[in-house]
Length: 503
Image (cartoon, rainbow, N blue to C red):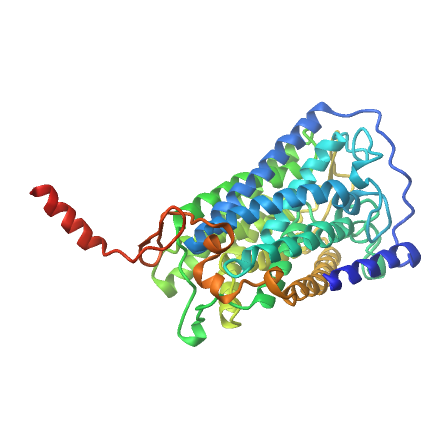
């Protein structure tokens, strides 16, 4: 934690003492209460917030299904605890860092939601409704972080790194992209001379802000932890450990798809932009569909199997990729973006396997590779027809154009600058955080002890198993209290029971 605290101090010092013309945004006037709060826009954002929050159920099922049975309870507890922790942190400091008036680096108003306004920054969305919507996004990023770290992260270590992720790292980059005066979304900061005036980094619903950031943090954690005990990679004659319950993983993935209809369409923040809401929704659907199909067909010639795991991660990759450009592209663009994501997922999965990086759920391929691709894809597929959603409807006076639609390479360059900037900073801060927690002695260390990992964190940390029998790779019964019983020969027991019944 010393590393993250030092980084926070450096950023704070730079914010308040050295706000140069290149790095700073224009001076920000204090936000004033709007004369009008739209009931329709507020209700729409609340419904979207509820859908995004419901994605937590999808993440819980997806991660538990892809993991081993002996760590399923811990996954449930981590998701619940991280959500509660994120909620308190977001109320206290997270929203202030993200959306408070400050400077180009970080916000510093609205701490504990004090001095709030009727709506948020002229959106006509009620202030607290906007806060709830953005909290659901922050919670999503925190959950993504745990994906590549499953099976060997201690529960106490999870608490420590979650404090840094939800309390500082995620809010920092969100302010750059979406916050008032953030350098990426407003001026391009030190890079403003590389792109024409009016061209800024754009990320409609978070391919970079949520997914790439979450994936980089997850990768940093996986590297700090190392692989799970017994995990052999393809180069060593092994392969991925099979999921203990692919059925629940598939159900969780579909729940995530459902929640994405709040994630992307809700980011219009306007119920009045009906055309934009519909376009975002259909682009979301098409990209997911293309990603799922292409991932399956791309890998079938090699494996000769219809891989449900790749189907799941394929359509999730399509969803992640379309999250950034969904407002500015056509359905044809959505097909192309989703299809490329469907290829990237298995390729990135193979790359991690080759590099001996243990990612049980595919968080880095899905949220990392596809998040980067989706961010860049805006600079290619933006049609030049759509501008920005407003409280009263779409404002298409200054449309966003990509390379393939006559817009040149400027938007693509802005996207590359923004995405790479976030990756570099998050990798430094996240790496310092994960390595710092990894060096803490005792039970607060990031990694489970060897005995605890072999026994299973469910029994070690929580005192009960997810099931009264461990399954997935062979069956063994456990007592309700969690004490393992000797392995049972099921065929023999069934034969004895049948003989007894006949007698």
